[in-house]
Image 1 (tube, rainbow, N blue to C red):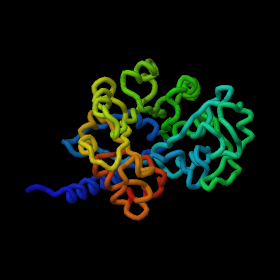
Image 2: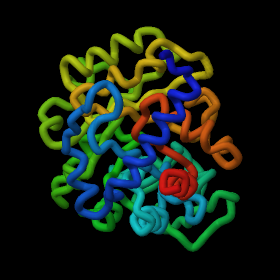
Image 3: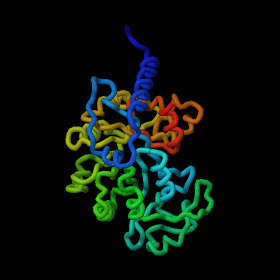
Image 4: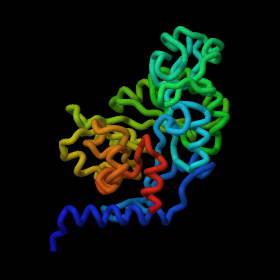
Length: 306
């Protein structure tokens, strides 16, 4: 008997949520070591013991400023699997957490972060989501590593071109197994740029399904350098790739989706999840995504637990 698509989606979502509840939520040292674990597929459905990973975008920024130590600490305490952070360099090449090139939006400073020394950056205060200046400070990457060692996986964004400046700090704290670097780049260029570093850290390619050649990029990684995960960006059109995400989850390669805003996920985003989580998170899970980066990590966690 042919099963209709809506019923299929219901079965897949139910199965995934059951498996997520049955498996322990990874955190602490378990979460850090999980970055290098492989997953054995079972049939053509879900991999064995598959869970949905919760990735907090820029930390817990709804309660603390984005990219702040306090926001990262909150992610650890709430048991999220990964915290995504953005890293840029100061004038004296100190890596600090900052999403924008400029200081204006997220701090009470002005101008480019690259024009200030680390000592000058330390005098600034972070702004919260409402744009109000807080008591919290801009953290350095080293401070973040000290805080997170053995506690949570770190996804580095805005970091690909400056990674050679970051690696000494990662080695200093022996945290290679907690680092997930990413970039929108073909496998050949990635291997050329990172070279021997690929024996120390994990790399995750970003693949925009709205751009030509997406399937070629995916197949290139799967055949030459299978990554820990592939981050997919897609629009409202349902492409052949989007309908076959599971076929790209070979050898334990995970599928990462962003529920941040509609242009990244065809409208199945965090705001929709506030009123219809099944059409947001449930839809993504039914497609085969088992990693979700979200601006509402508490809402996603509650949905998965319930």
